[in-house]
Amino acid sequence: MSIDLTFIGQIVVFLTLLFLLKKYLYGPLSDLMEQRSARIAEGLAAADAGKEAKAKADAEVAARMQEARKKAQEILAAAEKRAAEIEEEVTGKARDEATQIVEAAREEVGAEVNRARQLLRKEVAGLAIAAAERVLESELDAKRHTKLIDSVVAQGFGNA
Image (cartoon, helix red, strand yellow):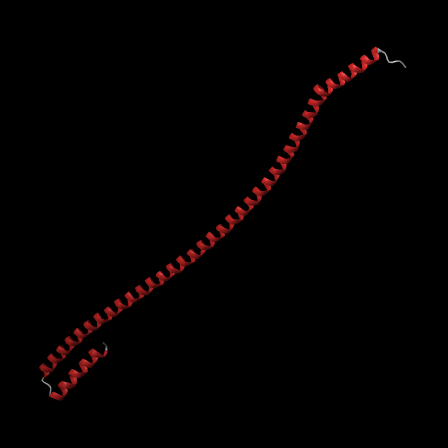
């Protein structure tokens, strides 16, 4: 086998072509492939971080919802308690007012009874005067006179 110049030229051209392809084609392509792999890895990492952030946000939302429900229950319980207090207060006031009305009615009835007694006393006094006039007109004796006045007064004051 003889190595001639064309064969050496072909080897030189082949090595030059190999060097040029590696430098200008394979090198940039492999760099681009590595960059793309890095971007894909970053995208996957960002997706994982997004999933974690979403999970944290969901947990925070759930916690806030639970807290809001708890506060709503507390507010509702306080409102129910206040409503019961107001109902009790109103009932107490109504009882007090009813008691005052009953007391006023009793006082009014007592005043009416006193007026009726006064009127009755006046009538009894009138009857006593009428009885005295009869006694004087008929000129009875002292015993009968006293007995007649006592009976009129007893009749008049017995009803009072």
